[in-house]
Length: 326
Image 1 (cartoon, one colour):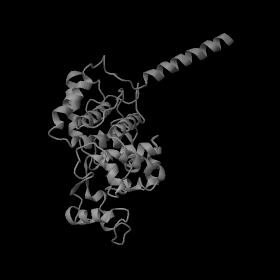
Image 2: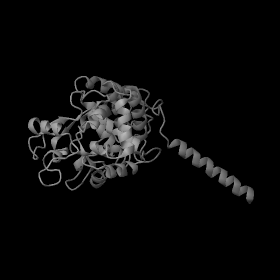
Image 3: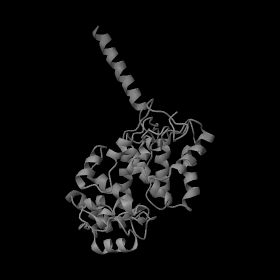
Image 4: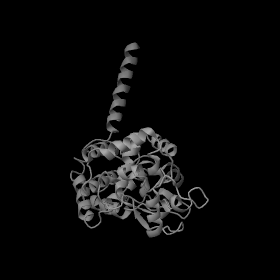
């Protein structure tokens, strides 16, 4: 009986280790099932990026928002199929997310070569990396094997995606919920070195910070005056777009951190990085360091984020169309 029990335990351990190994992401996951999968993604990115360099900012934001809700499972891509269905992309943080049509283009290219093989979640992750590289930013390893989620929830997107008006406590709590730390918060905020924002995401800092028509004192007054007179003319403006890193919105560099130290980060969440000693130390380190060091550290943070809550093995599905569950 003792030998039988020992044998049973050994079998269970072996089975557990097999299922565990099968459930892991790995480099070259599609090498046998769709050998050119990663090249197809890269080719589509490179075909579009020269004419639309802002695509990189759109995709990295999509990737970030996707991973913070049920993990990196492509759930941000799901469309509502009825008037009362509240999906992630309808939540306030995602109303200005863009790049959905581009992901559909990549998916179509892959489906024509390898139908039903490559997940939409992996497409987001690979396309994000390739687009950042294409504009001169860092590269990072993207192990693949993610599967697509079947659930997309409005409330979860609203509650879990770090808001541009978040203070440090809010930000670090939401990051910690995903297994990310202060350093990750600072590094991933560094993605604000590219892209634009609508005035509505920060205009309260200019016109009505505490509800009495005042300006956010943590924002450089000269910068605020410039924004009010030339860009965001009123609190009601929700269409005008402003560069998050003025002068280099398509260049992945260190200037974001330098702007934060000058109190010229566009969002309250940018200013929040200076309100915590540990975060501020990281901001100063990157602002005064080399671009190579920042790229190296940023790459590690992106790899870490890309593993949040992934579905692998038999979990989830491989969507035939990214906007709809099978």
